[in-house]
Image (cartoon, rainbow, N blue to C red; front, side):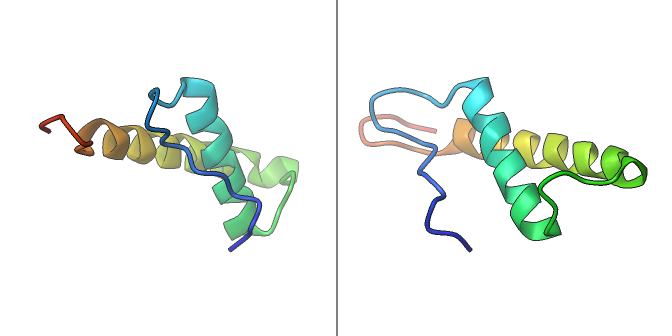
Length: 70
């Protein structure tokens, strides 16, 4: 992947919705090879971003951190 990908889960605060969306967008761009998809591919691109964001949100909600129980 890419060295510019930043950690999303920080120990001092939960990830914001904007951070989750930006991470999903970065992932979909990297995997698809498109920075901006064509109009014909826009719906598929947007759906993939939403699905990756939902999976990311779900995973972050279920992670156990030091001192917590999930």
